[in-house]
Image: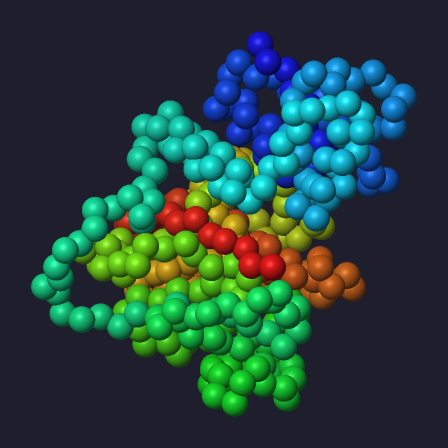
Length: 360
């Protein structure tokens, strides 16, 4: 059996450990390592969490996977090599994508389900159907940090300024804004890209429409729209992400647990049977993150008609948080709610998946 170390002791590291456990049964995580001052658990499962301070004997022959944010990879790799480790493997976005896809594919197969990706659907040579309107909207805000290099939009993409009601500044003279007509633009500090989603729900007239972020876009085949149409795909979501110990507990560890319990209480009041379904699904580990999608308009209408009342009711009870990050709880809840909605309704909608990128 091959023994390895993983640097990191929180969500990213535990996700990497689960991918390895599932995909490589002959590999065992010997310990989790860290070198920061953050609170860290004493152990994860049966494996110790050890500080990299030179006081504990580690075996430098073991390979090391760095399962932290990318900004720490270079420093950690240099420190490990100084300690004598030669096999150091930062989990880059590319490696994470490969592991995630392999893990989800195996997970679905073990459940007797098929994991479908848009790029794997047969390419369409000709289309005889009537033309349909399509658009992928890119949510941007004047409060966003600038990209290191400008992103070149595709012909089917259009920028939508989110949170436009909070500023007189406009990203361009002709940009669409989410503060026109029926809107929740003023809630952008809490709802983030959901103010753009709400606006699309109320105003967009495309047959197929998507929402991405200025830093995160789907990686799509050039004929993605024809594949969706000809294969009768209703929804494209990001490839699911594994989080530990469960969707519910992961949220409660990273955010205010009372927010989660309030949201679950709102679901229970609306529909007891549905809330029980949610509890079952939220005890699992996979969800599609980032509030990104491409959908037929009918599916988007169904999702928003169900989800926004849940979020609004939760917000009325929880109110605002003083911490800016934690105040964004409606957006963090919606990631789980979107995944629940389409898992619950997977016989109604044909859902496929696509990888995403992250722009610096």
